[in-house]
Image (cartoon, rainbow, N blue to C red; front, top):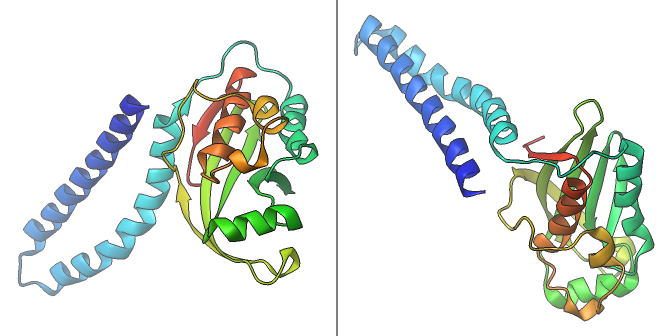
Length: 217
């Protein structure tokens, strides 16, 4: 993934350089003391954010890519493999929300809730997966939310979700898939890292022939 991150970084640098050139041209045309100069400078900040965030999403999807291995299976078959997580005795669950699958910690279960509280977790990790059947691609988004555990699973409060992107805790080829990771094992072996959710899901998608792209949404 190192080359992919370098490519993404280079594209971000290009955006910055182009923006600086445009700003310099504006200053050159209007002069340092012109009111239009200050209007341009002040307007550039919100405009930069408005343009940069979609650009960063584009860069992420174009650069942070893991190609599928072999012939891709049908979308429904892949979706079903991911939903099978809910059948395993594991601290991970899948929620369906419109056209996405959201894989996160099983905080609605009293047994796992107790372990999460003892582990001192202050953040809840969600892996959002959107399957594009026409391209046989899965768009993945990492989301971190704040959590308040309350007095039990029914009182868990989750907020935030503004941080989204790619959390660098994935190693391709060094983890098993969903079936191997979640169908067996000791519940006390979990360290509750993002990789324990992401690795099995990504490996399962890739090994079923689908390409993975990481984005902001």
